[in-house]
Length: 501
Image (cartoon, rainbow, N blue to C red; front, side):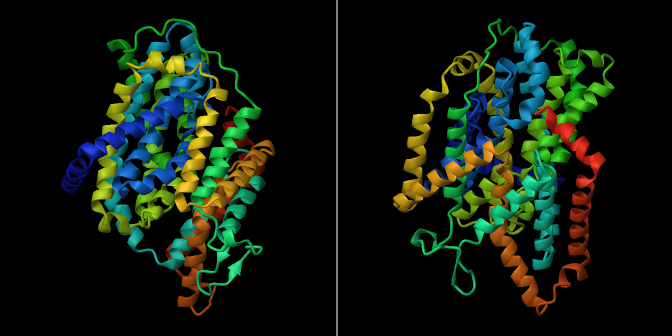
C-alpha cells in the first residue's frame, strides 16, 4: 500500500505542472460541453481532436483526452436531467428519475447528487486504478503471443455480448473492423492487400481517418437527418447542495454504485455501460419505496451516476496494464498512444511511469475540477442546451477537415473520412453499432501480429493456443460468454437490459 501512495506522489508531481493542469482543465471543459450538447459525444470529439495531440507530449495529450471522456459523463447527466436527452449512453438511466426530479422542481438537487456521487466515485476509482495497476502489469508481463491473442479474442467476444442490438450485427462489425485493419502492405512480405490499386491505401487506413469519418462525420449526418427535440426544463433549478439528511440517505446508493461501476468498468467489451443499469436495479430492489423509482427517486440518480463515473475511469485499467481497449473511447486512446509512439500494454508502467501515474493522478484532479466547472455554471449549460445543432455543425466540419489535412497534408485523407462518414450514417440507419468496428480495427493488426508470432514459435502448430493453460482459459471464458449470450433466456434478458436505452 505504501508503494501505491509513493507512485501517486510521483503522479501528482507530474499532473500538477501548470501545462498538465491547463490541459486537464481544457479536457474537462470540452468533455462537459460535448456531454451537455446531445449529438456530439466523447467518441466523436476525441476522434476530431486526435490530430491536435500530435503537437502535445504523450502525457499531456492523454490527460486532455481522458478529461474529455470522464468530463462527458458529468455533462451527459446534466443533459439527461434538464432535457431528458442523455448526452452519453451511460446517462440513460439517470434520465429516468433525474428528469422527473427536474419537473418536480428538484433539478438542483438531482444535479448536486450527480456531482457528489461522481466525485466520490472518481476518487475511489483513482485509488482502485493505482492499487491494481502494478499487479495487473505484472500479470500482463507473463503473457506471450498466444496468451495475448486469446486475451484479445476474449475481449472482442465481450464486445459482442455487451453491444446493443443484434449479436449477429455486432459480430459483423467486429469482423469488418478486423478486415479493414488488414488493408495495405503486409507487415512481413510488404505485398499489398485489398488496396484495389489505390495509392492512398498502400500504407493502410489511418485510424484517425476511420474514427473521424465513422464517429465524427457520421454523427453529423445522423444529427442533421434526425434532429432531436429538446424540452429544456423551465422550472427553477433550485438549491444544488443536498441537506445533511438527503446526503445521509444517498450515501449508501453512492457507495454501492461506486462499487458496482468499479468492478464492471474493468470488464472488456464496454462493461462500464452495465454499471448504471446494475446500480439502478439494485437500488430499486433495496429501497423501502420501490414505487418511487421512475417518478423522481434521488437514489435513482445518485447510484447510477456514481456507477457511471467509476466505470468510466476503471475502464482505463485493461487499456493501460494489458493494452486491451474495453470500449470505443479506449480504442481511440490506443490510437492516440500509438500516434505518440507508445505501445499500450504492461510495458507502459515500466518504460513510461510518469505517463501512467501522471494520468492516474490527473483523474482525481479532473474530478475536482468538474465539480467546480459544473455546478456554478449550470445557467450557462442551460443556455447552451437551447443552441440549435444546425449552428454547431459547420464549425465541427471545418475543424474536422483542418485536422485531417494537417496529418499528412493530403486532401485524399479528407475524402476518405467523408466516405467513412457516409458509411457511419448507413450503419446508423441499418441499426448497426459502430463501436465494435472500432475495437476490431484497433485490435486487428495486433491480432494478426500475435497470431503469426505464436505460430512461428510453435512451428505452425495451432494447438499452441490450447497448450498454454492461461491461453486456453481465456478462450474457454470467451466461448462460454458467447454460448451463454445466444441462449434464448439470456438473449431475452440482454434485450430487456438494453431496451430502456
